[in-house]
Image (cartoon, rainbow, N blue to C red; front, top):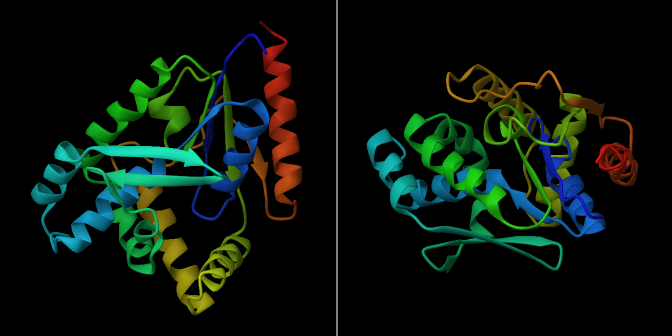
Length: 226
């Protein structure tokens, strides 16, 4: 493919963004970027440093921490100042606090700038998150908005925890997802919104393979325009 596109995939927690975006990027030979991993990284560092109650300290972490994402063997590895914190950022505690941390202006501003800078990489890119279509790459060539019922999303999160040997009550997961939806969609800076140009795909009743197939079809149609 001669034209290297910017593909933005947004959606709420548990909608299938990460898995789908990884596979789409692999099919196209594009760079895959999990923007949420950056917010999770700052959340983990804030928890470890016991500064969750201080927006100023969390902002300082976001401004001064060097975050590096490496995608290999189907997995995104996250490094902060050279330390591999990949496994740490997927904990229950991080899940419960990441939306609170990510709504802090002082956190979003430097991380969005880092994400925007990735467009200068000389290759196609698939980036997923909550504000990629609306804020990070408003001029993205392809905009996708994934959604799913809260029941289906809770089931997916429960399955992820179970695979890691973590036992979490699905009712608690559902409650956490509902709270995250509310925080993400009502925050003042970069709220979770469906961009007017984004194509919405409900993933409640389709497989990951079907999601990927739908998105690849959309992307290939856009490539034909160039």
